[in-house]
Length: 137
Picture (cartoon, rainbow, N blue to C red):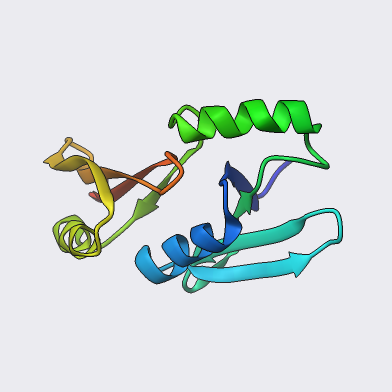
């Protein structure tokens, strides 16, 4: 019935700040940055994989009325927005050192988890990101 996931979404409070973090700091690339009039459609993707994108969405219309958007912004500010995703890397330790040197907030240091080595970070809005070096098989 389905062939793949195309787009996922995270709430961010400032799309320009999110763009700087996800592209300049994390190393993703812009997939789409379009003003739709009623909202800015801003997505990023892993370089070389344009089939999957993450929408960096500012809470508000058209998805929520202003009162609901305010509640969502409060939750995001507390790190309770519920957003997260995982990235795969060939070298978790090198990725960890690079992101640490760039001042990224580390939530978990690299740890062998049986399926591979992974670690956790948070974006400037509290969204959780797992980065893993996954073993084959």
